[in-house]
Length: 355
Image 1 (cartoon, rainbow, N blue to C red):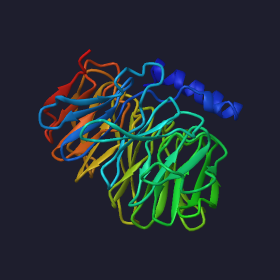
Image 2 (image 1 turned 180 degrees about the vertical axis):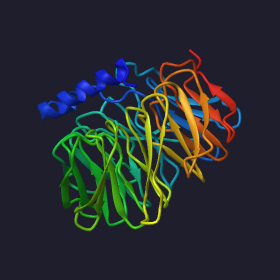
Image 3 (image 1 turned 30 degrees about the horizontal axis):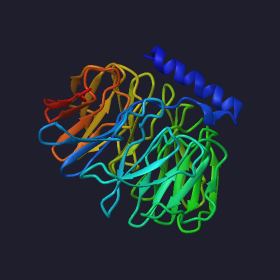
Image 4 (image 1 turned 45 degrees about the vertical axis):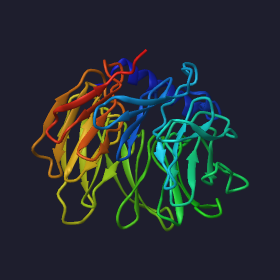
């Protein structure tokens, strides 16, 4: 069921796509982004970025010292191999923080618009896609690795992915790009049926899967961008798909959840869930975790059976995150900013920031 909030975002998105150059001024997704390491969960949740202890659910630190109410943080944080936490803000800046203390290491301030999707971190590079139509490649000290960032046709809301050779991402202008990871030059571009708001996902055979606002899951050849096949959903797809080597999983605005086989012998399945599916599903071992706008979190096995529904206060727009034996869920408009569930769906702790 499409509720007022999602309807308004959809209307704004449609206007952005129609108006083209106006898209960078669009109000984008406003739900938290979550990641975790062995000790803490890190949540970009509005006026602050928080570190929360995974054992106790207690706040470890928050950044910045003064609440950023007019330029909030929603992009999913990312950890680098050398021990940095990278997170973007609506103030057009990308920040490197110390994960233990929350102290700022450096900031990158050359982007012209908001950071909506999280960055992609590889062994030596940060690939950061901004709503200003550009893909930036940064070193771990925050300096540009490409003298000229890659210029796309429209705003980029999702995180990029990479196979080591190219970096792949989609735009609100219905384009999917492959950009050489070393040079920043275009390898290919493909037009698809609908704006791309989320992140693509790479299959084990390096097929690229992309969900679109036109309600289509597209698979592309990463070598040349050619179309392999399309699968149609019942409504628009907001976030990107997920895969486990057996199926590609994706949900739509009508609450339909799909498993599309990645092999010729696989069997597709579909489940009707309660509430629009906005975030990407989480593949957690042999379990798929899906959140919906109705405040439901579903644990589903990879055959589509043994569904365990859990209800938490609020609306689940953010993609769940795995943290060892816990699943982290960040509700919107609920009583808690973060909820930790175990494999049985029991609440282990919940986090509500102190004033």
